[in-house]
Image (cartoon, rainbow, N blue to C red; front, side):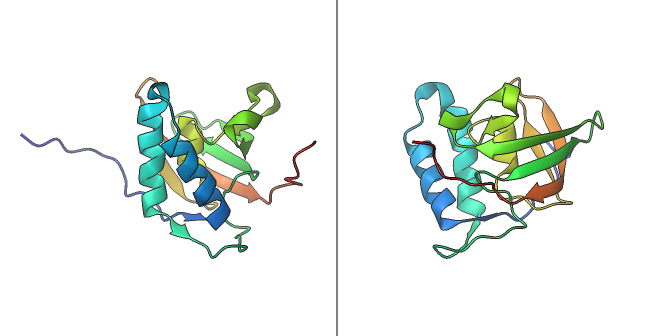
Length: 141
């Protein structure tokens, strides 16, 4: 028996070489508690177009990008900064790339939509409405 789904094709994504390397390491080092999320991120990494080292695209979400997106079910818009797991601070709007919504957003461009699974397994659709260049990514020492 086959199951049909209403999931739309996943939009093309683009990653910087630096983000791809960092995320590949995060997937490889993910603990058992993050196995499903790491597998989902690994699938995104496998399908991404990788920019040459030192190149980036202002149009694509990357680590440090500001992103505004809309939940298509509720119409609610959210504005976040996509960050490395150790920089996450939900109260400050800093969302880890190692979360379901972070996996969905990485590499996306404005006006593109993607289906993603929440932690509870619910399938949601989000549309990126704006991508802003990362601010200063220097790590405070």
